[in-house]
Length: 159
Image (cartoon, rainbow, N blue to C red):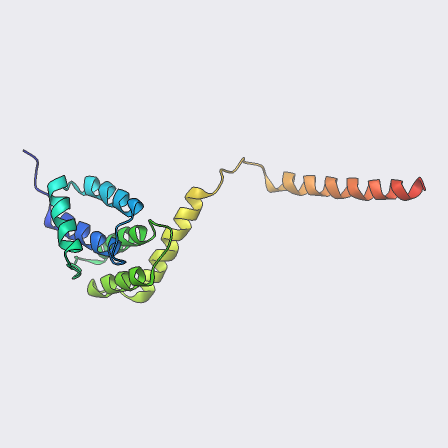
């Protein structure tokens, strides 16, 4: 028999589901994120369905969380959830701020968390560096400029 998820895990999953559904729908990428969190938190499919039924049925009261570390982890997860569809809706931002305030945080903390999550997403999606040192790039630019100037000088010389 599987071990029951902790109250902390269920609260975290509930808060994430509320943030995901704040715009009145659950997008596929939001559901994918929730499924990943469900597995990470050790929540069964049945428990997840119960939580999602509560949220879709109208539950909008965010659950409280413990100390600053738990609050930051929950805000980070919630920010990732809110950005899962690539767009931060006004209602999602307000839900994040409401979550932060309910947990003893501030709007500024939400803004910093969103900035950190967006930077991480940009970094993860950036093309891999080829490891070319900057001096090589500068040297190549100089060579191209010298070549262009030489070409132009020769064109005028041969007139």
